[in-house]
Image 1 (cartoon, helix red, strand yellow):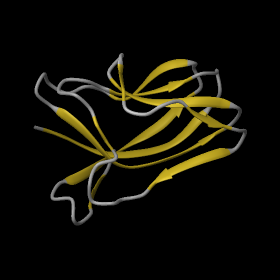
Image 2 (cartoon, one colour):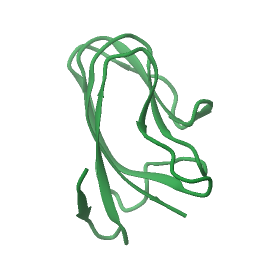
Image 3 (tube, one colour):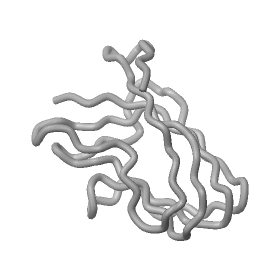
Image 4 (cartoon, one colour):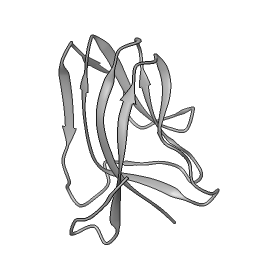
Length: 113
């Protein structure tokens, strides 16, 4: 993981690889301590095949609805200053993959109070 200082975000962002091919929930950023909050500021990925992707906070809190992707479909949320997703305290950032399709990319986030 590497840090990149991007304004107007006052913190250093941490990059984490998105790299899974399993269906179901895939933890992309592990939960920190019980009071730690993950904030996702930038994300991009490519889907190798047809699937539906849902972003989640932990195992049960939906951060998005299911989004359909075709083979070689991609998604980019660029840096906007405010986080695209905020997980609950002590919860992981999870991407649910409806099919056993390779998903590859990077997510940039902060972990803090």
